Length: 214
Image (cartoon, rainbow, N blue to C red; front, side, top):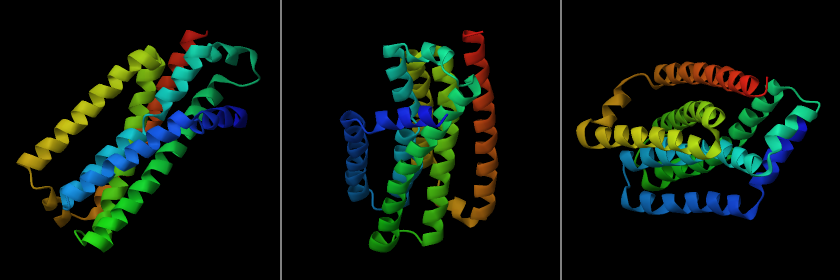
């Protein structure tokens, strides 16, 4: 399984992927400049960066489809469980890299703009990690079921729904009212939901792969 993880990480080292990551990071700079408030921080660490960080599975599977590498798994001494698990691990690595960048943005809002306190910033960062994990699990099912290209439409639907929820919160709901609740309770609920989504996403993706090559 280590070889599968190394193969996926090798894709990340390609110039095109590094440029995409850098572009996503730079796009958050004008957001931070023009929206120096709670909503701007939420847009960066809860929506923009987690959405980009959850999309690495599509890149990996698209490369595999171009080279028919997925079929080669059948001749390798690896199980289908290891194939799916390796993809999830690689996806988590990429998501964590993105969320590390989001963490820097969060500290910038806390200590430079002084928009929110550290505990609020950490709560938003945790929410972004939870959201990215859930989106990664949903994307996995879509990509394994439809393939890398058609699965992208599923990804875009999830992104559109997420943006719609954010816009509704921005224009029609006072998000700062969430701060009156216990952040630790909200985060714990989110972690439980994310773990359930990851488990379901893993087993459903595995079932799809087993049926395809049974």
